Length: 426
Image 1 (spheres, helix red, strand yellow):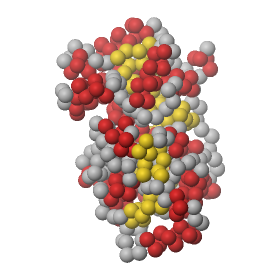
Image 2 (image 1 turned 90 degrees about the horizontal axis):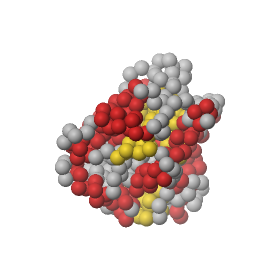
Image 3 (image 1 turned 135 degrees about the vertical axis):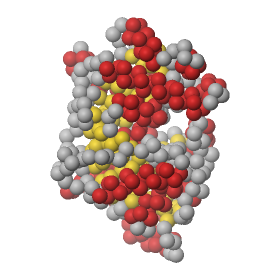
Image 4 (image 1 turned 60 degrees about the horizontal axis):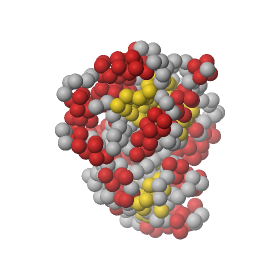
């Protein structure tokens, strides 16, 4: 490695990591995403490293251990600032894992405080008077209230955090955030008196608020939130380096889309893809569980029936049908589906497919693990928070990994267009 890191980010899942990496790269930092703590980075020349973990819903103690390992690696490689990235809908249970991980990072870095800043206005997530809204709805009234793993039944960010953290939150509402930096710092000092550690929750209603949040809190060594403030934060740290050109997004070759997410956004994107006349194949979870279908049989059928067209293979379904499938065992069925889609991704790559687009956080993690890539350069974004990714070990492949809730209705069509080079488009 030719220079020390300027910035290090620890994400609680893979699509969250790619989301964060896209906003960091937008600042001009040469950014690389790692699937887990890297073992070797000697010959890489980067400004920012994003480490993707799988800590959102695992055992709390393991989440803390994994996050501290990532933090230690980033600090060892010179990162002057650490960012704990979690979902913009604060996906967690009352027990964690956001609070326990942040407590551990503050203690490890011997920092007094950090910010809790989940908002991402460009994707409809804002914090208003301390409450988190999703597309105009309170978090507790949004579709996230029925999430199968992390149902969100509270909207107040301070209450969410204090339920799982050892330390209190100080709310910085719209009136407080209107002040100058000096006024805000004076207010915080007064509110924090007698507190060993604490968290600050600033209102964040529009994209422009990111600039002020970065100005006031950018000097902190430990920060946290969604991806909304990352571009502004990293732009502050860019004074030491020259802005880098993003890698080329397009490559020749066929594309495959694999969708495991059952979010409303992904269901809409599947419908739009079908409407455009592309080939699609729905996976039947029961047939997989009973052994009537396998990754091999599904892939063979898709290749025979698609007649050279782009391929979409999906397990996504409506919430009521998903609940019915989960009656056979939530974890068992999820594992079967993820395993099948990831096996299909491997078969597609072996068959020469060079553009692999995946919808769903857990599905994306399974696919990347199966493909065996562990480091990616970050390219241009298809949608806010969804970049084109280039595996360091195979620069002829392009991956697009999106969280279920992200992207426009025509996201899959945009991804096909942007990852194709000119000759393939013709």
